[in-house]
Amino acid sequence: MKSRVSVILMTMAMMLLGVQCAFAAASDKPNVKILATGGTIAGSAASDTATTGYKAGALGIDVLINAVPEVKNYANVSGEQICSIDSKDMTNDIWLKLSKRCNELLSRGDVNGIVITHGTDTLEETAYFLNLTVKSNKPVVITGAMRPATAISADGPMNLLNAVRVAASPKAVGHGVLVVLNDQINGARDVTKTNTTSVDTFKTPELGALGYVNDGVPEIYRDSTRIHTAKTEFDVSNLSELPYVKVIYGTANDDSLFVDAAIKAGVKGIIYAGTGNGSVHKNAEAALAKATAAGIVVVRSSRVGTGSVIPAEQSYIDEHFIDGDSLNPQKARILLQLALTKTHDLKAIQDMFHKY
Ligand code: ASP
Image (cartoon, rainbow, N blue to C red):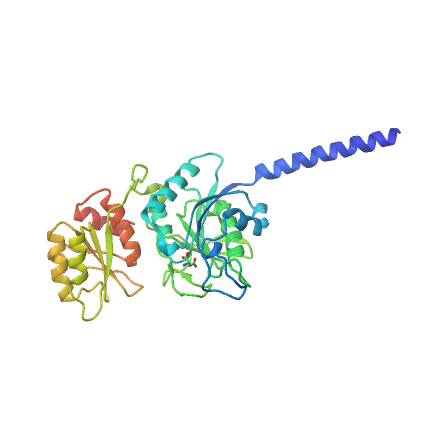
């Protein structure tokens, strides 16, 4: 009898200890919030061999988290659905909602980092928008997938696990918004999607990745020198819309059609994705000069993919075109949108292109 009582007491004590250990383990781990926006990582196809023709954003965040229970070994995770879209359909409204939600969550003491699941098509744009508007040094990590969740060898589960590992790591603090896919960690400013279908698609051309996830361990080797997150001057907390800025793609045999249409539509800014060092076809140049004369801000960017757009022709200076530095056209558009929320002074905007 005595021994039965002591067994029960011992069992109760062990259970209590177990509960305490579980608590200690939970409170020792960082708290990572996963904000889901849709994309192929949440995509569902009709067959497990299909990698196209699926519905992006079909699966909710809880399905994604439950498919990778290992994330709970690294962080206390909880999910929140921001939207369920194919990221080709990304909007300013969703960017503003996402940025504001990141800022709310990161200002809390009980949130240590954020993971965002996203379609890969505009992932680099969302990453750069958040890199300029999130006001925190805590890790914000964006991930996605090239194969739908239902595919053989889907890349989403490992990408999600690695994103949580990075967001939970003190090593990720203060590096700006990070893009984690295919075991690589890239910085939001310089990363771009380089392959339409391969899982090895997110790259930082020439400058290189910031780091890797080495067999599950995040390592960061370098940093971008450009200002980001907590140190930027941009504040979206009171914004409900963003200025209308269009990208116009320069080609041989170009004309003024799109520039004229953009002026007529009332754009506030134009990014001209020019040839070479942001060169502008003479037919488009005349129209762009009309645009700057009408108060529209024109930025010369490049369709080349690497290198910086630096001062070139005297006529570009005379026509008050801004040099887009090394941002690709889609990211130059984001910086110009945010710049126009602060100023219309051309010198101040040019400085921003050298700063961010
Ligand atoms: N079209 C999809 C999206 O961007 C592609 C992907 O996620 O890989 O949402």
